[in-house]
Length: 111
Length: 112
Image (cartoon, rainbow over all chains, first blue to last red; front, side, top):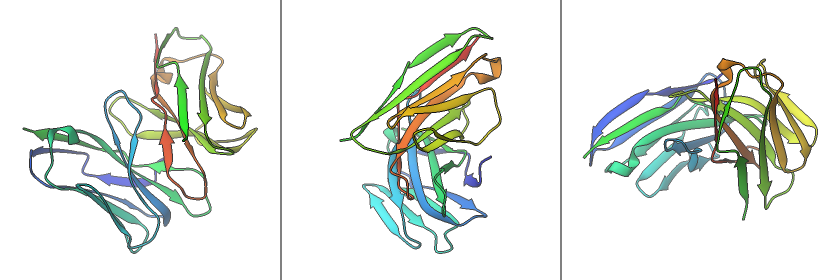
């Protein structure tokens, strides 16, 4: 089963607002990844994090790899309607080749 | 550049029929390959992953099986589909060693 706890489950925000979502785990992860999925399509990679404490930006998106290696957050600034979708965190455990996903955060942006 | 192909895009199959979904990767060698299932409105459940030809790790006991006959080919199969096998099936690849994974476009399977 899944080992990542992602929250919130869903968010309804106004266009222009900032968004924050996070993932936590009881296990130490070597890699944290954030994906976005549009309806009927495969997830698309947004940001990849490889080092504890790492803070990485991709346009209006910023993500951080927690110091404890057990958590990560994703922030979206100045949201726009095309940010609508489901955002997933994913992680790889140490010495492991599989990749686990959080349950997703469904984002709705109202114009 | 690397690309991943997954087919078919949609599939409607009767209960009890067999299943074969195929995934191929181009532009890389010896990738890690993954099969995930996503129920409607839910997260991704890891079904199988493979680190090499003929090497399959199963995460969830179920009605499905996977095979990797070639380095860049990953197949998801079932001998007899159940209604509960309906879902969105996603294939992904990575270079392993804690690197990012890239997904195919998915196959929406409806078992009727």
